Image (cartoon, rainbow, N blue to C red):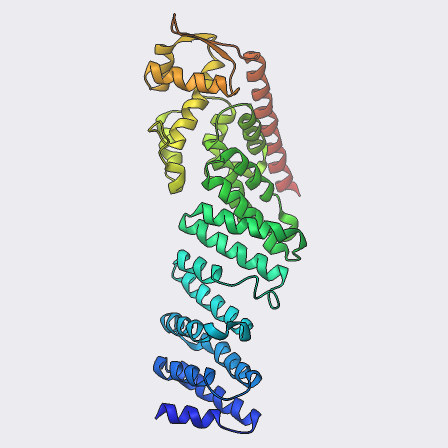
Length: 389
């Protein structure tokens, strides 16, 4: 009987002999995925008359060999182990953390990010301060935040990333610091604070000195471009679009065409929007209170600014025709932008006319053309250098 064998193993008097015998038995039942014997061994070990030090040594061997289990067995036995040691968890802090880490890895492999977040968030961070350094706490908090973001729970993600933020200055792990910043940008992104998210993504896309892979930097740059495109139209967005457009890396990315049109303040048409929309995440396609998506709203506002560079005045009906919305909706979009200081215009509701008070449109267009020419020259120079270098 398994119970008798386990009892005999635990009653071996010599410590080294007992450890070696128990290790061999644990490896045997784990390789066989024998959960019944595994549970029985753990139950008898925790309730045995061995000293706490000896019990911890054997339990540590038990935990270290759990990597021999397949994913389903790991989840089953890991949950049972946490339940079994729960009354004495302060005696097995390191082992509990290792079990939770292993269960977390399995949940992530299964893309069950909610369960992954919950298994780590159940850690008693205050009680485990003896074994959890600042670096460990930051890593755990950020992992929880990352999982909640993957699951779409930005509020919980922000909560745990903020906990990491309170410790991050004292964290020595550069990787954790970068992950914290990426999480912060993703949280802003998920909260539809696109302008600030784009700025943060762009700063992170320039962190090459920390050994970040070029592909990851380009992905961050792509995120910056996406968020800048979705941000509310206005002077701040225009400046950021210019920065992104002038970054030589942007020309190699898939959204470069629409970025160029936005930078040049051209009117964005439906086919451009549909092509761009194909690459968006679900929260980017969310409906706003107006009944339109984030992208539709951003492009309508952008087109209003583009129109203001072409006309000094338009009727609301004419503006609506260009924007492909009703005159009432066109007036509402323009009024909101004026009120928020994102465009200079006056609205005469009696006559139904919008008067645009733009800057020197000719000069703006001239500056855009000069910027485009300079960028083209730089591209040619780089090509020549690559040939003759």
